[in-house]
Amino acid sequence: MIKRIFSLLLLAGFCLTDIRKKELNTKGLICTVLAALLIRFAEGTLWTGVAGCAEGGLLMLVSRLSGGRFGMGDAILLTATGLLLGIRENTELFLTALLFSAVWAGGLLIFRRKSRNYEMPFVPFLTAAQVLLLAGGGGG
Image (tube, one colour):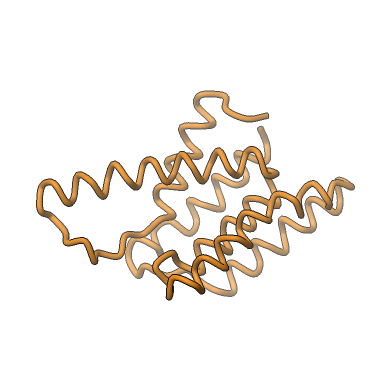
């Protein structure tokens, strides 16, 4: 539960920048990953965290292969949350955020507010997903 709250605070910290600029601060992302590594190292659960960040690593590859259609900053942030939460809880976070973003994007398209080429910030959906998962007692 504490790691979920900490990851929520991290996500919320990146949320406004992602909404306004649609980019994430590189130094902030590096500090976030390092903090997550230090927490896992201090707990003696580093390998559990490393397994959790595999999802973020896969998304970095997706970002490269898609020409940035999925943001590299989002992938790095999911690497940090994966380090904190572990693979099961991070996957739950990611899939919930994907569902939220799909519903939102569908609404934007249906009501003709944006075109298909609109670049939507993803961190707000990660933040909302983490709030929902915390409220529902999701994960450990």
